[in-house]
Structures are given as C-alpha cells and as structure tokens.
Length: 112
Length: 115
Image (cartoon, rainbow over all chains, first blue to last red; front, side, top):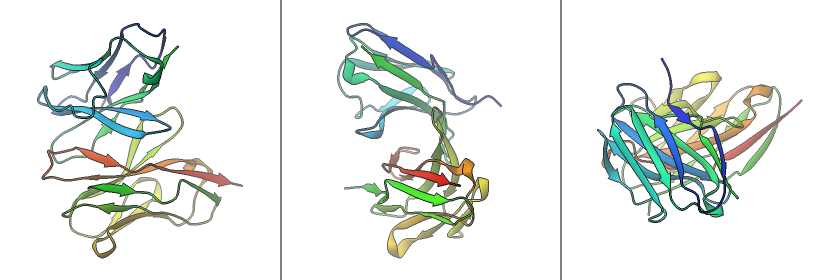
C-alpha cells in the first residue's frame, strides 16, 4: 500500500511568495494531521482534520497559514505571504480512529 | 499541563551494546503511548505502541518498551544496537478523551552508534 504522499519534497522560495504544500493521505484514513518540525520548537501540530472537517487549528501560527481538505484524498497547507521564519520541515500524517499515525516524508521548506 | 519529556537530548552507544531511551509523561489519565524513529531526511516511522493490556510491548527492529504507570514512564530498549539504529527517536502521547489521534511529542533523543 502507498503511504502518505507529500509534495513537493523540497521548496525554496523568496519571502513574500505564496507556498502551497500538498498531502495525499492513506486511503481509508479519516484523520489527517499537519505538523511543523524545527530545531528550536521540535515537532508541532498545526491542524488536524476528521472526515475532511478541521477539528483543531489552535496550532496554526497565524493568519498567514491556512489548510484545506476538499476531499478524503487530498489536503493543502498554504502560507501567504511566506516569511523566513516559516522555514521548516512540514509533515503530513494520517490514521484511522484507534490506530497510530502514519507520516509522510515531509516537505523541506526554505524561505529566503 | 500535559507534557512529554525525553530527558536525554543525545546518546552515544557502541554497536552491540544495549540502549535505553527514557520517556516520561504528565497526563490526567492513562494515555496511549508511542515511539517513533526518524532517520535523516525521512518522516517518522512507528516503532511500537501501547494502548492497553500487557505493559511490555514489542516493536519492529528488535525494540521493546515498558509502560510503568507508577512512574509515568514508557522507556524504549534494545538489547544490542546496530549501526543502522542511529537516528532520532520520539516518544509521543495521546489521549482518547482528547479527540482521537491528537498527539504530543517529546523533544526527541538523537542516538549515535559508534563502531
């Protein structure tokens, strides 16, 4: 079975540009999570969805960040406008209720 | 406040030696407990999980962990490490009463394996 698929794997862009990260969860999983990992703050949960509905977005750092899940097989995390402090590795994870989360390989984002 | 502590930021161990990574948590009830491993440039891979039942759980790659309620701990062990075990290890805790699947991660322990 395919795992959680994230794209792109690497993104380098200039400050002020819009960045869109994409995630395809494992088929049949009804929870989807977005995390951010940095050296300073470790692994932080940004937002998670259940059955495509956002449940908890308290970890989203500010209004520049937004996430959507238009259907069960696709989610996006958007940053607009991007800033250098947004540089991090962003992970998507998914699971079924009662089961552990499966992580994608992440998107390494660098904002210049 | 809920918290997960991994006291050791960095551990160096010789190949073939035993390894123990510590994890302590602070939660109001019995949590669900996980250990994940992250190799450079990769996502997190589940090593093992504790939901209920036997407090000694076996995982992949020869790892095991023991849940000790009295000590609020879930330490990870491996009797003989291999060079391929060099990675970062994360303990994670979740609560079923707190919307399924929402996890709190520890800061991680970096494991270096020497020849």
